[in-house]
Image (tube, rainbow, N blue to C red):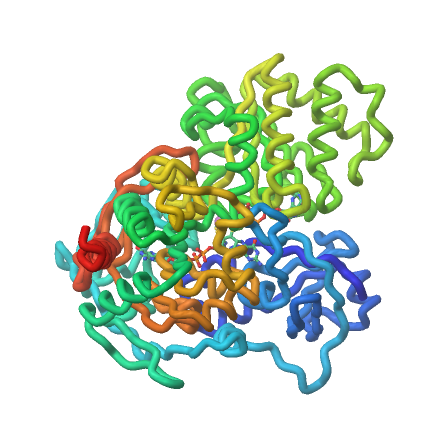
Length: 573
Ligand SMILES: Nc1nc2c(c(=O)[nH]1)N[C@H]1C(S)=C(S)[C@@H](COP(=O)(O)OP(=O)(O)OC[C@H]3O[C@@H](n4cnc5c(=O)[nH]c(N)nc54)[C@H](O)[C@@H]3O)O[C@H]1N2
Ligand SMILES: Nc1nc2c(c(=O)[nH]1)N[C@H]1C(S)=C(S)[C@@H](COP(=O)(O)OP(=O)(O)OC[C@H]3O[C@@H](n4cnc5c(=O)[nH]c(N)nc54)[C@H](O)[C@@H]3O)O[C@H]1N2
Ligand code: SF4
Ligand SMILES: [Mo]
């Protein structure tokens, strides 16, 4: 059966982000959610295996019957399985079609098995690394103790009220955090020393050797790419820019595959933003559009929006109206005052319709707009207009679906329209704890927020051309440093294959799927655990992300500084 594949976050997939080599990660990322009527048409029952194929490839999934999914769609949790059937075109935006791929779904054969995450990487030319029994790589500063007001280095909420319990030199308990936070703080898959690919296996090497290898790799390459940075702190990001400038490299960060299109929109029409504190204390109408915070930013609603107390609201919980716009009836949609179930890719049209209504042009609206009834649009527009202070939280349902940055642009223009009547703002629901930091530091030092090409000796920026996915798809990048990101799990398969073909260094505290495509993996202290630095919350508020344990290995800034110094000396600068 021909369906449209879309992918997104689930809480169970997120809990496994630091356990990608474990069977449970594979179990979560190889699920596919399909409407029961479509399952009937395909001829399989809930729990049975299906084969999904696309222009990029085919692989096996386990079907889950789910009435929240529109007929005609299949929803796959983010991960290597979805990306194994994803093409790598970005339509000039840098962001792949994560939310929109034509696929064919058929029952799987008796003998067709679900591949594990490692097996997928091996199919792309990678080599798995078996970490064996986990070793403790950290030391406690305070014996067995409890540390308060810890900042969570996982999602853009950057919650700063976490309490961690330390026992035997490791974190054993996490209070106040959500289950994603708990998964990261208590993860044990840390690499102890650098490793280098050695034929069909791996050998240990020293930090000196690993750092020399990386510097020389950059010096030898014609078109080196340095990618990632959302998982590390601002000070290390700044050093990354300095390396890229000196090596004439392209440097890009995760926003190019994430909220980069939101930035492109903001570059066109500006950003009517504010801090989360303003929203918490003032907002009485809250819209989550193409964003699913219950699974992606689990404490966002309780800390900053719907369920938080507000200084200027008498009874915030009752006074705040919640509007959700999604293609699926997510759990947050079930609790909304208005749920607009939009046809996939219909956002641009619905924004335009709401703009027209707010402008007083109700008569031009047709009975249905992208699957949404006109009466509902009138109702929602009235709710927006009655707001004293409204906010749009926009997710990657907008940036990775058809229309991409134009969707967000139209959203900003709706805010502009509404602000002629009342106060409205728009905040992209940035994903990683420090992805906004990448945009801040890159723009501060390089003049552009991501996808900066230094090959001409000066900064050049053109998403779709100088963005990581595009560079890899065109087989242009001929060496790559990956730091604070895991493209092995999260890039379209063609890009992963390219990474396995070229010299590649991963700088990461944890074993990741990208380890499989690396020639060298350099372990570092993890920010928020045994390293510290500046992180930017999803509203651009900078916070000091403190460490709670003492490291036994260098951190990102130290490793990058050493790479920088070798390149500087080699260039006689
Ligand atoms: N559990 C978990 N949490 C995470 C992460 C993770 O991997 N796992 N990753 C982090 C990262 S990097 C990010 S960027 C954030 C992302 O956080 P979100 O923006 O919430 O990400 P998604 O779940 O991918 O997509 C959001 C919603 O968009 C909807 N959608 C899909 N297509 C369309 C469309 O055409 N129109 C509309 N209106 N909606 C559509 C999907 O159904 C989904 O519910 O999450 C962060 N938090
Ligand atoms: N199919 C599909 N694929 C998608 C998406 C989708 O919706 N659908 N969404 C896309 C999006 S929005 C994004 S942002 C990407 C996910 O983006 P990724 O960046 O791939 O996400 P993570 O797997 O969380 O990778 C973070 C990495 O940083 C490492 N890390 C943690 N702390 C530190 C530190 O202190 N220093 C260093 N050096 N590293 C550290 C972690 O170990 C981990 O390997 O996925 C993209 N892929
Ligand atoms: S909501 Fe995000 S920042 Fe807050 S505890 Fe959960 S993962 Fe951490
Ligand atoms: Mo993201």
